[in-house]
Image (cartoon, rainbow, N blue to C red; front, side, top):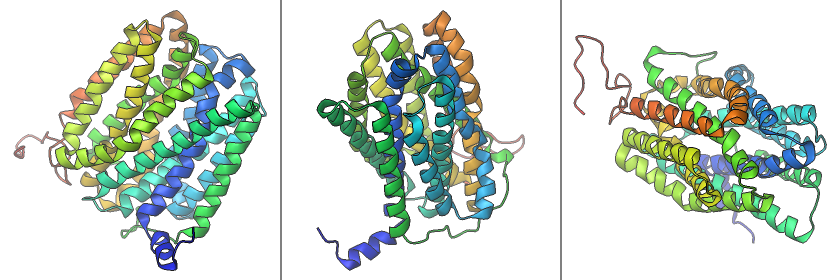
Length: 403
């Protein structure tokens, strides 16, 4: 089907279409890597929970170093950083299957993760600059839906290809790397240049008035890392989920997110960031407690799906920051926020990998405690956040605005 020139030009000039397209590319590649990894690590490299914990910490080091993205933002526009990051992601994915050993997987995972985290930093910076505040939750919900669609495509491809040909892990990883690189190149050729209306501050930006956003970001990174590192591993190790079983779970929650993403975006616009962040943390407390107590593989699988669906509500934290921030702070703060998000992520997998061997239940109970702390802080978010009204707290002598 031929696209009319006017439609092509409109798409090439649309920030939303651009953000959707590159997000699809990123998540297609990462989903392919992730869906294969637990089974690949166990079957080809003989990993246990201890090695998985170490590897997950290594995977999060690029996220911890995301503040260095400000250096790249000094040298090139955020859009170019996004394209280069996608190329690095593709390379890391493509070579993963060729190194089925402890050190091989540490190195290839680090390369893949560097591409993924630099891309996410650039994408968040671009999103909050290019999208109007009134439309950001809705559009970010659509982008989340597109990310779910990309993951569905990846999981569907894995299921179909395994069913028809039974290829090696190396072949699958190489294929996903090539496709990711091809889509990134197509996006670079198709879309025009985009930049925000306000020049961004150069260097690292830390402001005291953003403290609540920083703490919420830290806690969300800690609890998310616990689940990412050990949620899927529990299904494989304790409940015997096969690659096909695990792919079906991922397929299920992405299918739900395909429709839930836009709905959650509209929900945030309707009820605001405060209520959404509270809702997100309530759901996570329940998921962690359930995961720590269940003896059923079916229940654990359902909780895995619930976590994947409600994770989309993280959009509310980002739009909360967009509303309270100086527009010139968005790009440098995006890089700092990714580092804050990954401070705990670098430590947790190694520390909790050892704890996992002793008692997996404690891992998820601690996750419930972290989610509870985040829930308490969510009540400090104003119903109508804006510069000067970042939290409901005020210095002594300054009136608290009506809620």
